[in-house]
Amino acid sequence: MSLDFSEEESRRYSRNVMLPEVGRDGQARWRAARVAVVGAGGIGSAVLYYLAAAGVGQISIIDGDAVETSNLQRQILHDVKDLGRRKVESAWETITALNPHCRLQLHDLRLDAANIRDILKENELVLDASDNFETRLLVADCCWLDKKTLISAAVGGFHGLLMVMDPGPGNPCYRCLLPQGPPPAPQEGILGAVAGVMGCLQATEALKLLLGRKSDLTRQLLSYDALKCRFRHVQREKKPDCPLCGQG
Image 1 (cartoon, rainbow, N blue to C red):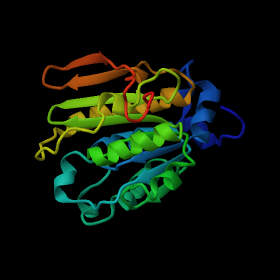
Image 2 (tube, rainbow, N blue to C red):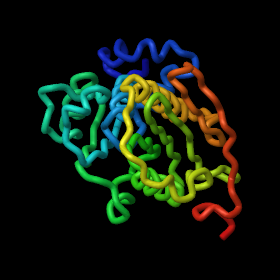
Image 3 (cartoon, helix red, strand yellow):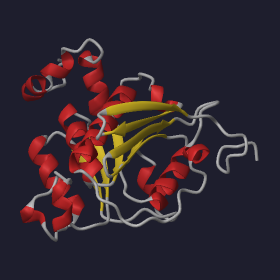
Image 4 (cartoon, rainbow, N blue to C red):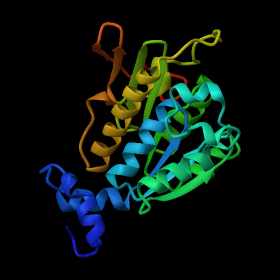
């Protein structure tokens, strides 16, 4: 490990450094990275755990909710003693206990058009683990306009979706797939383990991108069907008439 890593850090990250795709330089990249995670719920719990465990240096946690009993079935950052606490505070305590080297920026609020740019501006990579389409579209629009790469994950029932939006030439944006989002739907159940799977996949894509590697999900949608234990890739295309990135 590089000399500017402590002996404890060298031991902590030794299995990362053994990977030829990571090595000392990759671990240093992760430590220097600034990543924002929108949502500290089911997907966000797994994302935050694994980004912190890998050694990502600074993570902004954005969530405006408190911990409820119904969250505990899938939101593994929190436990019974956290009921009623703000999720960002519970997440801070859990992640700090796992890796005190990780610097955490807490934002106990809901994103809106007035605050989103200031909150996301210092982050090089944004991960959307939110649970509503209004927030997803807002985050997707902001990241695209500010030329930040976005990794978006969603779950419902036994299914999960994952995609990467890279505002580069010829790449599709979020609205190329969902121009306005789906109509409102009644709340549905979620298998907690599926949220964990999608959070782990989202964290893996983030760590790869921070190493400078490309993602196949820049122009594809990954769909996960837990009942059939099946992954499927669906091609995504840039739409000329897209309201965000189209010719108009």
